[in-house]
Length: 237
Image 1: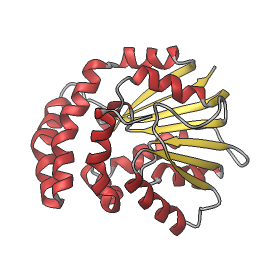
Image 2: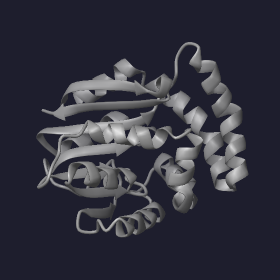
Image 3: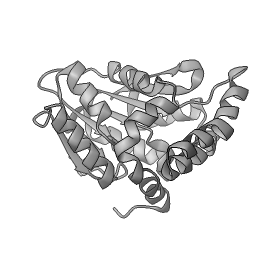
């Protein structure tokens, strides 16, 4: 499938960040991004002999966390060749090349059979696809019945924390990004409007219903770090 304008923009935006992505993602989230990823992995039921598909794997951070905590095999998928190259280096450094296989592919049309995987994770994905509901159906398609599916996305804080979040994404994040590099400055300018727009179009009730409509049951969610992170999980029907 040829990339759409939205997915092509995501690829272009993040391609230059690969070598520094994990370090500055942790720094700019005040250390919360690694914590959110660990909680994401905790929602997955998998073990030795299982294979988990990690979509939007990027630098393979979640894939390696799955191997460490679940002792499972992982297939990581991402549309960015640049990010996958960094991921392959990380996998090699972790001596996990037998457990982790990385594949270049898009989430909207996965090159896998129905029910091929025992579980599935995806991270910061739905803001970058044209049809989140259709993408959820495609993700669910490749998971066996009863397999767990979990998602990590940026959340939108509420109440007293909302003005502080707005100040950070409007001023603090772009300035911090500029101090790092031109690429991170662009990401810093992009993230706030992207997160705000996604949650306006996909408020929690609509998002969770889209999961159910995709054939996922027992859907649950948890807001993390005062609402800055959101993890959703469920089980394939």
